[in-house]
Image 1 (cartoon, one colour):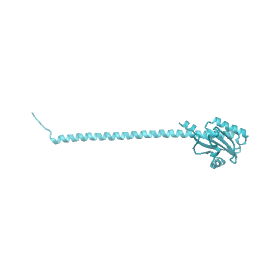
Image 2 (cartoon, one colour):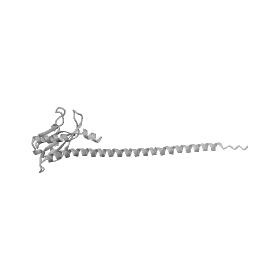
Image 3 (cartoon, helix red, strand yellow):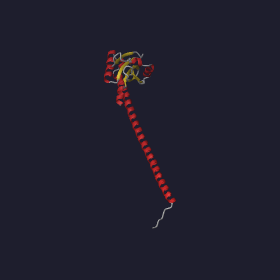
Length: 196
């Protein structure tokens, strides 16, 4: 019987090399999987960011269209009805019709060239909210006197806790001469529901 024994040093070298190879393989796999996970995380984060940007862009278009629509309604009413030169009763009818056709309008007021109210309409109970004229600041009237449209910052109604803003346009005659200001208090709850 031929008994050949491997030397002690070669067995330990084989064991060391096997452990080193196994350890290196595990490290390579961990690094590879870590890089793959990081890459997947970055891809998903970029995709979520792109979706959020798209949603924000669509929301901004919706908001812009909402505001432009309200300005268009006000400008059309001012131009087609010669709002500045109608009787008080006709002014009231026009403003009340606008309230009925546009649920986002809460209050409307028509001011003359001296910023005095000549007609107003409201869809609110008298005690539930302040009249729109209390919110009209000098800068609103200065903007419309200069021929520009005006949009106020958003504010919250104390009685209803709804977000509101004021929009105002200059009222002109057929020659483009300033005849007054048409201002509307807009309920933004309709817009928020639309964006939702």
